[in-house]
Length: 629
Image (cartoon, rainbow, N blue to C red; front, side, top):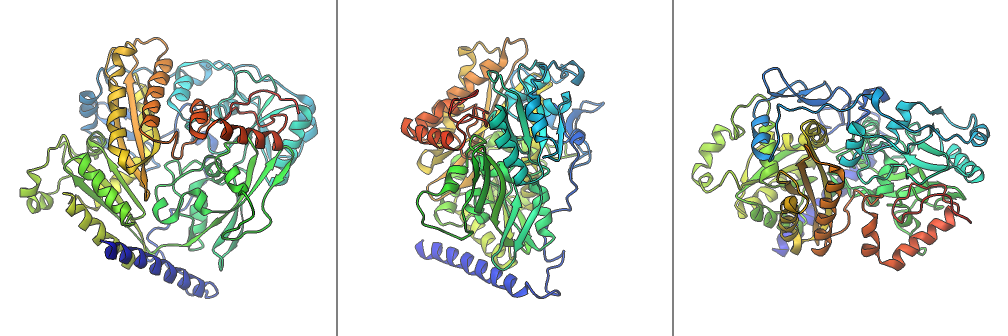
């Protein structure tokens, strides 16, 4: 066993070193770049989206949504994705059978933009006069105020669709560089203005929700005009990049140089580099590229009292507590992240998808544990429970069979073994391999050998590719469900391996047993998946929801059930969050997680860099409103 693990680790390390050496050797050779065929993982050319291309009241592109066709079939409208325009004939019948109380014939449309009531803006004219011309753009119309006043939690989307706002940003400002951000923050301190940093607006922690108690003028500081790659050091494999750049745009630009960052969160299309740092983000391919904290070399952050940054960009430093660790996960309460120097990698030569099915979740978790134990995980590997497995199969376009993905060759090859599988218990694992072709070949052999050991069956590339794509559809499905009175959301945790099964089963039991407790007329639903692997544990995602038709204040009930589920997570030894962050949604658990003294340490840093609470979004430690120095 240990020899096998060593071979896997040594092989991967050697290939990474050889790949890097080849890249360095080719830096000054104009004819030695990889072509499109070699660079199979090259990101598609990026076209920067316009604001009016995004939904004002939900996730993603305005033209992209699930809807019912004339014959009752589910259609993915729009033209932004490979499955856009396709029909999914089995999805309706599946969701009607799975979600208790849903009626797909009863549609509840959201309110129109014109009907949304917003508060009058609070204007600090002295501040605006003082900073005039020190930004790239400024707006205070209804559309921009509304767009910048919400993130993407179910609670926030519900308010957009059916509610009324008590507090929104009063003005939106787009700076174009670090110096402008620094000037604006210092001016805000001078004139007693509140500033809330804004990146891609993809927060799922209520981090950009304006505190209702805030009486000062609130400026939403949108960083997306700060999207330049300032420099690239090809020999050291580093780049300095402005914090407002959007993930897909960044990856596309780096790919044009035969380089990549490799950080790919589910929000990759819309979230920003600065936002990743501010929330301690994790990506789908963290197994080979690392989480954001592994990719950061240097951070430059503007605060109301000055700029924070190190004086060198080195792979490691021993100079007291690391100020980067104070900035990572700070969620906009300490400063605005304006520039980030990150590690790069040569663009990999190939990408391969794969999928595996297991007889049940226990077999799948045992497989994932051994993959982590041997450090054999590929770029991405995710295990979904039976509910998500079935949903994925019903989102196969044009396929009228519930399990139509089972090809004839697979049926015949594994007919005897397949007979042991219960289609209502089996689970699926989607896999992404990325790197040099010989590395991928070796990883595939290892993964499929381990899968076979744990009763798994290779289910092919097509299902792996589809499973990876469906990651980007989950938020669209959440918005689609609102129209049929289904409120739902995801949350995640980091948990030791010994407790993975326990937390999955206990959270599900707690959610499903809450119907009587909260007078829900229909039973809640809950499912889960394992998404990231570590030596000592894993990240587990939960999805839960319920039908809220005829319920008074469904958001309050939703919050209560979600809180109970989080309590169970903590009882099982899980974290408050793996990568979504804390914001305002989870801050009541922060003291329990970090201890009272730990929270006071954070508060002390806050008082040092922002003594009057200019950055008053109320995240983490709950400091709201103006503070005396």
